[in-house]
Amino acid sequence: MSKNWEKILLLPGDTVRKALQVMNDEALRIAVITNHNRELLGVVTDGDIRRGILNNVSLDVPITELMNPNPIIAYEETTRNQIVRMMREKGILALPVIDKKTSQIIGLKTLENSLSRTKYQNPVFIMAGGFGTRLRPLTDDCPKPMLKVGNRPILETLLIQFSEAGFENFYISTHYMPDQITNYFGDGSRFGVKIEYVHEEHPLGTGGALGLLPLAVPDLPLIMINGDVLTTLNIESLLRAHNDFEGVATMCVREYQYQVPYGVIKGEGNVITHMEEKPVQKFFVNAGIYVIEPSVYKSVPRHTKIDMPTLLEKQMEQGLQVMMFPVHEYWLDIGRMDDFERAQKDISYLGL
Image 1 (tube, helix red, strand yellow):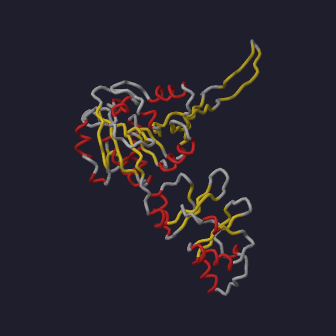
Image 2: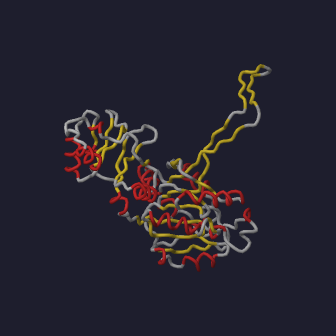
Image 3: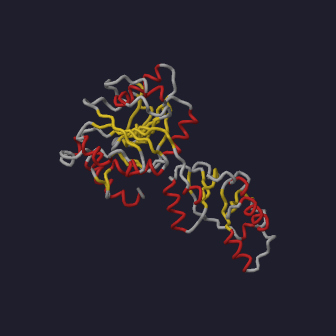
């Protein structure tokens, strides 16, 4: 995110001359026009101003005469890869970042900054030991994370996503057909990352493999994800939110809706007090992605079977805070055959 973005904000009454001044002062080739509430009205680039000058537009007219009122924008959850792709396809060098709820500008993404990658030393733990029984016969001779969605295994897509976001320390848990995973990924060097493997001799639940992590794992919040998840989640936003929350863990959640197929009746005794036709029930469900503090994942005993909800509930029983992070981006748990078939269709437009 450009650090100087607030200095290139203009109001509708500001002139073209002032826009040129802020562009020159901040070495950015864009100015952003907002109202007094910082709600985006439009943008103007140096190219827009050059074309205006060629058409004899005075430098003292309001900048709104040259602005683009329908600019391409990004949201906080838009990934770096999506931003770079949009900029390259449209031939633009900067995008305003908008808060979806308020329509206010909260930042500016530039192509230069988006191409320079921040490095994160946080460990990434990918759970890849499951049997994938609901995907048989596909998983009879292939572990589920190695099934190809598009032209690469699900696990490889996850690894590349995290790598492109700047993460380089990976740990992969294995159990079912581990050799297919270790032979394919090796030590991670051909992907530009470091990979260590944690092998479960017996299934240890969704959280037990944490107890098998090496002692040398970086003493930083760990990102844990199931190896069968396909998502465009902005991983950096998740990590930032976790650090801001200051809880011991953050669970990614997904809104799940269920429509009751009948009219629902409420009453007191024999008296009907309320009727609702086919109501929609909304819940948050576990998305299989977590950020966990070292105090939590280092507390798991070796070779102890435990599921993640149980592990997190233990933290809550101690009065510690476990936070949640809603996933609004694309998310798919590839657990069943229809999920796998949907993933094959979706992968073409996800840019993964």
